[in-house]
Image (cartoon, rainbow, N blue to C red):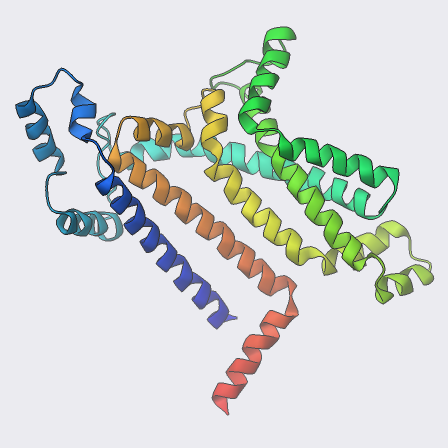
Length: 317
């Protein structure tokens, strides 16, 4: 197991370094002048040149790349935002709790309702309950997040007046963003859970468990789910990372000052330090989630443990 975890951690480090290299290179070769964007169209050429000198963007590519890697991975310094004039890590630290709150809450809804709908559909395969559940899932997965968010604002804020339309405040401000962020994940989890349940529904050990007189709920909980978990775990992990990484849309529509809106405003303002830090944050977050998924694989599937045990014994011999 230690070797398995070490390999996954090494892969995580490589992915983070590769992401940092790619985002830096893309921003460096992106057409346009960040100093001109910051100063405005009325700035003189001398002012733009002075700003480029102050920002350090007129230096050679390899020099800037080396400084970026040194500051980011050795000093753990993401630089100062060109637009806000504050250290980037302070902005991320202030906005991160809102993004994570929406992501975690949406993931809880994904798990609860997605698993319930998938189990319900899988245990009623080819019946009207299955068709109705999959039709609901298809509607959820087909509707774009921004459209659902706008329709929720129109209905629950403008028409009914139940919830605030945007901004941050008490718990009521997060209800619509969390629900909107969870609908697509509920549909994906429901479809994957249904597929996994159907794969094991007619297996011999399931028939044997039923023949022993066990209740259907016990059969599902003790026999079906443990053997159908592998693809479900994958869906859960990718869904969680997708919710947080895709938070920009939800946060923008509901005017929530999170990491997603920070990254979008940085892109629009050509605030390169903020863009690089935001992309790295999402990359690290996704890598950590997928690392947890891999560790869950090793915990759930005994074949992974057996594989690395055989490799270890072969090395000893």
